[in-house]
Length: 488
Image 1: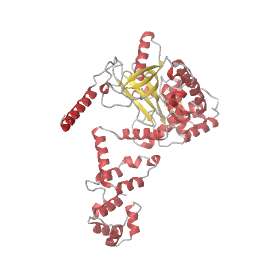
Image 2: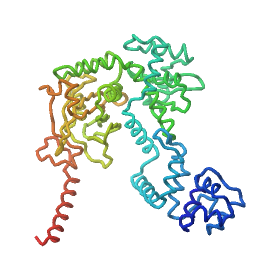
Image 3: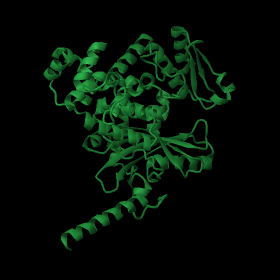
């Protein structure tokens, strides 16, 4: 491909047609066409003939070095990212990219150079690119994957789980042992100091799934279901720890997502969940207890429940404008980080901000953590609460129904964690969720970060609106220039 790319670029730079190059090099037009398409690689004598006809030397033609204009494209073509990234998932192929690069190399080169500079300046790692690609893949399919849902249906039928709610830890362990020869060990990980904050590890050589101590039944069920997915779907390229320590390939990241999706879908069967969503949405008043009851019914974590909603709401209810975020607080509730996000249909507010700015303290996802910590101080017992609000974004028409659940961090109980699903409030949402107009559901004016917010009377502000002030100062400069231009 690189040889063909260079050959086509040099030919175009010299203003030669394929016929003219064929005549100069003593080769057929069809043969040169295949070379330029990356389908054939010529022998030494033909390379020399082409190099002479194009005014280049043999070494330049066969190496991966190129001129300043071409080098970024060649670097991309030879990178691990292109080799590992499954372009076919997005309807692309290396040939598609090659055709694009060779047709407009100068413009494509400028674009690729820009991307390289951005990734370098902001220290964007390969893992970040893979995660962004995975989120785009989920968005492309509205986060619903029929082949995985069908595999879950077959699994539940084959192993007679159709009427099992919740699917118990004992049943899942038995399935692993009896059908896949995998035993579960809950003792060994706790003896390894470095693994005390790691939830699981799978040893393929020993056929043992190691689970750490202190897991809830819901957390254990997810990990057992995930391992069943790896085995049942016969996934070979996979991570062995709960979370990928290093995302060294997109395939491994994608397969981890597939196994996680399978586990959640298996524990919350599609048909029953659709009925439960309909029943919950038809309540006239917002009820935190009714929402939390779904966690108990299926014995799942809050994150699993909300992730399942992101699968089923777009597919079965037409609710496609939504986001999912996970927030983590520090011990003193002064700093909040967004550690996970998913956006379907568009980039919704809120979204991750990597500029060390302060997320809006009016978000329900932050206040539900504060509420949990306040209750824990008062009673020293509550471990899980839910809340909801309609978030109206400042100076926009956008309103989101935000459902949020907070709990203590498993390994650092002094920290709070919340997961939130936000649904764009439109006519379709009004028809599905009857409690959208409930008096028990508060509406708050919100923004993304304090630094960019112009709400003047905000009681929860954590930082001055410095970014907004810079923007307004720039607008004043431009307006002054406009006055000079018009003589006013």
